[in-house]
Length: 265
Length: 239
Image (cartoon, rainbow over all chains, first blue to last red):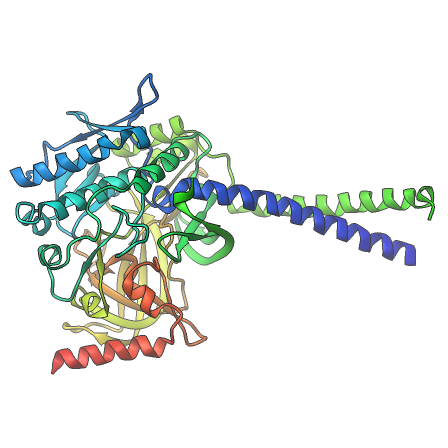
């Protein structure tokens, strides 16, 4: 009897040890994958636009023809595009103006600047509201920075907050009570208005993963931002009750996986 | 100690371990399969095809291409609130209350999945207009399953979704999009910065990214601090 008990106890130990080892291996792999991903890739499913040429350079097409932008605003967009194209050696990505675009620039209200991945059937686009456009002449560098920030979302980068360290074009525009976007741009602007080396390096890692056959957002792996540099990663399990075509979210469980730092790849 | 004496025992240990682990693995597989989210991911080519179909024929047709359509969405903008006063100034209603229900469904234009929440208000902290005891708000994303087994699952990474029966503080703005009924509908006033869970432990938890100033300030702080700061702010505005 004692022998059987001993056998079961040893078997459990072996089993638990093997489960632990099995659990540790994917944890490590996930952490590496997360570093390459960056939240922004996940959040914006960027990096999946355009197609690669024979040399492996990814060409992403954009259009300004439906933007209705002023000459100053058009210049801000073109210079922002040029900034990213100047980093193509690091990003392996080139933006080309085209009548059959992967995404468009549009004038739309709501917020101070946003990327929309065709969530309403009106196409993939970067939306710049009138208030932001109105200061494109007087505060050119900030508006160009906002456009470059939105293009960063297209390239799989996510928001970095107000004053990220290291600096990033993915920094955000702080708005105070009662301020319009134009006010916020005039009063405060962006801390960083040009693309940083770290941004271009991060794009390279993210975009490769985003375009791989193995990448899937269905892994439920998500990031909870703890600081601008390093991020806590979680496996998130959502439980739904579905009936008659619609579903109700019953529970959401966040399991901590570890930390990743997006500029280390 | 003679190694040979213990070898049948070792064999027994290994066999029992295999049986135990096999059982656990089988149960885990059944559990994962029953959630319906562990199928092989679509290749990039398949994903692109599904995206093209969605652009022309909507999300249900896109889900039919690979059996599922899984994507991510965001509720955030380049603009972030510097403080709760900034959040308040962009809100039509700020309220504490409990989620009564949530239902994910395909949006009216057929392009996306959205989730409609019913929010039962316990305390209106700020509201220029008169509101009922219950209001409706909408978030992008959610899950929809069809009779043929296909599904669409749209997520908002980094955002903890409000759950039925839990208490939240929400900064909401009017949502002027199409709605299936006459009731006014709301959305988060400034994306993921606009929502806090008020936990039974007395602490507030930001539902969105903690890099943004308001979330940074109040996350894991006593809920009463956040609520009192808003009450003080509203009182000072009235004066």
